[in-house]
Length: 354
Image 1 (cartoon, rainbow, N blue to C red):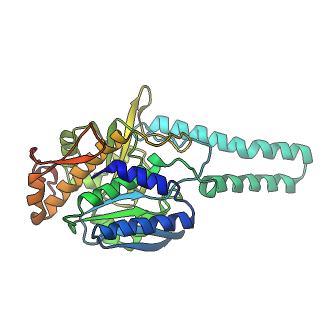
Image 2 (cartoon, rainbow, N blue to C red; image 1 turned 45 degrees about the horizontal axis):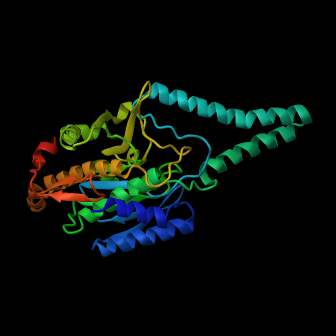
Image 3 (tube, rainbow, N blue to C red; image 1 turned 180 degrees about the vertical axis):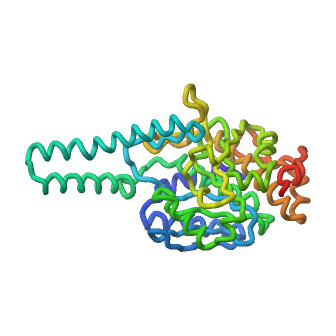
């Protein structure tokens, strides 16, 4: 499973996935790749404010685990999308500063117009015009050309996992690439409404910005902690990389997992002095490709382990394969290796359900 190949191919062919045409071409690509792997795949359309077109591989209603990521890319807004998942005071401070900049952007020019013209009409027109301009820039503005971390990394994580399961295709695992996350988690909202039982009962592992970092941040909601009490701790002990566990209720990580009761948010993070764990790069800070591919691989490996153990706990026929293999990583090249000499932890150790 060569994640570097996925990263290079997707970034070269589909670096921006924002317009209808760009998204359509990318969906066709993923559906073709899924079919080549032998999966049943389709585009699932739903309405949640706007039309959303998710890519669904496998059976969402039968799956016990959904591995997800959003495939749409954001607009260039000139403001950093600072993610400080485990530092709420600092997060709110940053959001307040961003809000202040937006207020200045709208009201200072409006005040100048009012002073120069004295016209209520001109003042209101300026206010409304600047507000509409800001909304346009945020939602439908100039496409951001640099999307390797957000969220080509998550997309490639899903594709790599699909490839790793291609030989077995366990029905307990399905894969979803969400549309319109950048517009307000709309694709995930539509899927959750269309698959209400899955939204309540299925474990969702959502990967967003997993390309750059020194550790894997794993935010688990209360319902998932109660149903799978050993999930986070077992991953942390067995992943081979630093895994930072957090309670979703006490953290700030707005991504597609929020629409699922058992939705786990996963991202790469770095620990910074004074602010704690930071997920980067942000929308306003761009890095050229390649972006720390080794970091991505390490995190993807941990997700592979987690997903495979999840599958083994739900399928006795699949557990035989899992019991003989362990996913590892070679730091000397860009491929993930299946190493047969290392024993897996038992499925029951990870997914002890209540």
